[in-house]
Image 1 (tube, one colour):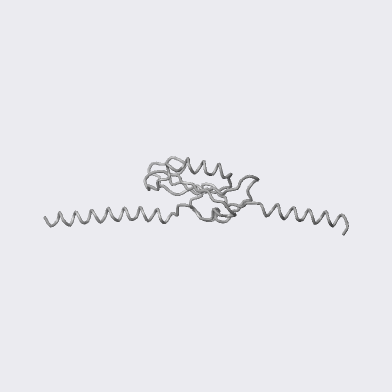
Image 2 (cartoon, one colour):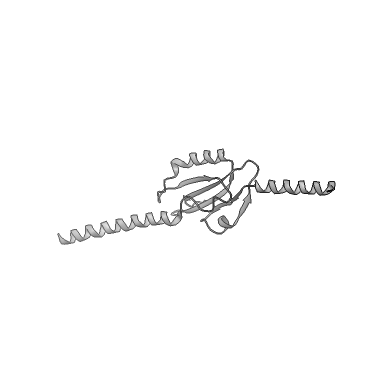
Length: 150
């Protein structure tokens, strides 16, 4: 085996080992749901970024508008595990899932493309608020029925 073939083999092996250690995460910023860009954009993380961070925020639009509807904002990115845990701890007190309040939740995961799903799926939250509204309506109708009999 000549010297150039040996060098080429070593370089090829080093390139394969280098790419096998690369960590990938889904990335997006302030998207209105876990769709399109958040599910189709993948990034190879930088050296030392060993975790994927997902943040979901429920709140009004970024610009002021009286009576603005609240909606989800999803962001995903690569992060160092320590920073990811720090952000998660910071958001924990505000991760209330109360539909009429602004809140933020975050999650960290390890592994390639582990942040495909978000930690708080929109249908579950919408179901909770819908059930609350339905329950209130049922109580109002029940009270009215009782008052009508009197």
